[in-house]
Length: 239
Image (cartoon, rainbow, N blue to C red; front, side, top):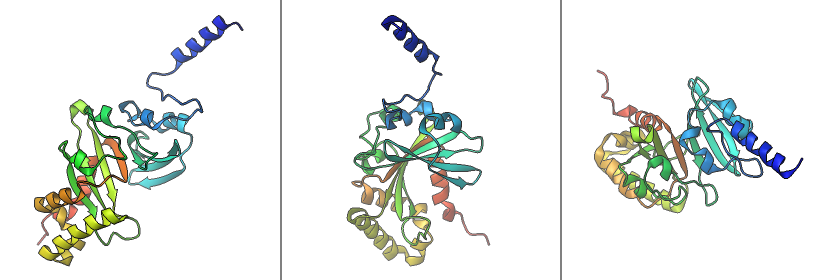
């Protein structure tokens, strides 16, 4: 086969790829930047796994599931709906496991692994605390910052989570807990009612402002889901 024939064959193969297909690096693996895009939301699991390969783990969640993959030696979790479409992706962050979400946000953002809670809060995001103390064996104490996307962002949300595990995060969470407990009592903290009062959300925003995220989630409905989960205790008690 001469060079002209080979070039024509390669061009034909490229044109035959389906629109929106996930590009690959030379070693056949996708990049994180290619995965965290609008095009890769709502895809079906077979389409996703054609490139990523089978999930490392699958956890059932309500009517859907969460599927864990390894991409560029980083942990990525895909939230899958009942119809087998991907609703959201979560990336566990580290110095080498990161991506930039500026295209989704439609404004410049720092790279995910160095983005602080304050940087996301300045965009109009809100802070919440999924669990401050007594989280049980299935969850870690953590705070979260959620930005809810509008129509210009195709209704795609961004949620950054901060696990309270190192000296900086534990100090920030401890100071916040001590303040709330001093003002409202231990039961108030254990019942997670601090998410119901704006003053404590504002206190959390200030406490977490300089902390970086442990993980970042991009997807549809994830901000509303977090808000619903953290405000269950805010409903008035039935008499």
